Image (cartoon, rainbow, N blue to C red; front, side):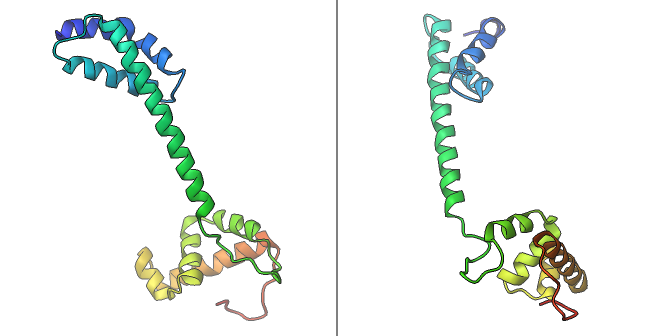
Length: 164
């Protein structure tokens, strides 16, 4: 197939092929592009290139749709299996989901200090090295994060001057 003929096929049929693929998948342009790449490499070219393109696009769109469904299912399964941020306790005064949402709402720098200190057991010196900050900066972020969490969760501040 000559480049000129391939170019004419793209000009005449790419939009219709993308519309056709859109029935099944969210990435019709990718499917159409792959079909034209396959056509360009096909030796000898098919007798009816347009019908062949529609068949290849249909098959590609159906495959893309199946892959998207599989990906969504795997992501949903992985999300369902992820461990909770907070272990439930029958005596807990906090709702674990609310606390997890409050933690997620923190800026990344503060959240990573809280997680690495409380759940990872890292010292502020180790956290500073990990994040490229000083240990005192890591400690300040930790204190700021705890203050924000207490405010969001309506938890009174303990009587001691420095939290764990």
